[in-house]
Length: 140
Image 1 (spheres, rainbow, N blue to C red):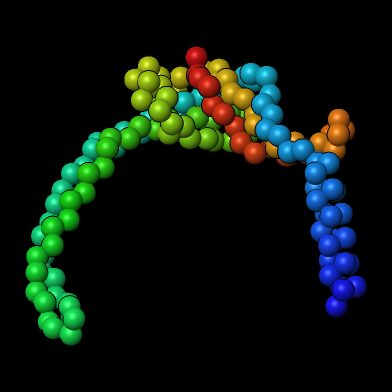
Image 2 (image 1 turned 180 degrees about the horizontal axis):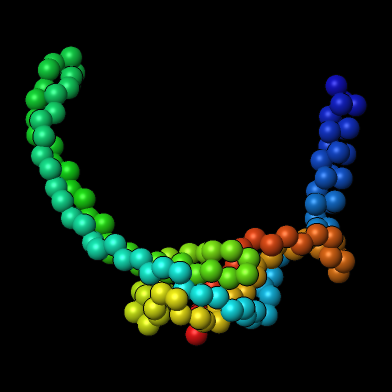
């Protein structure tokens, strides 16, 4: 039993040392740009509603009857669809309302964005790097 415990302790120590040598960081590219066309401007107005209905259930072994009210409130939403050389993409972020107000369907624009990467380093050496997402900045 002592040998198994010693072996497990040694393996755990090696795993911590090896894992401790790797550093995972988030990296962003410089600002990139490319031409795009506005394909669609989407607006969904806010929606509100409520409803009431009977409820029937068991409470402590006794039949209970009540009324439940449900309310729904969905805020307005804006989206802009762009077409670029790599395909279509949709912007639904906080910037979408501003874009929706100043762009028109068919308009040619230059979109700016950054690429976000997950990079793994061992010491100073880059071991791997993977693209995680695109951060849309603007369209002019």
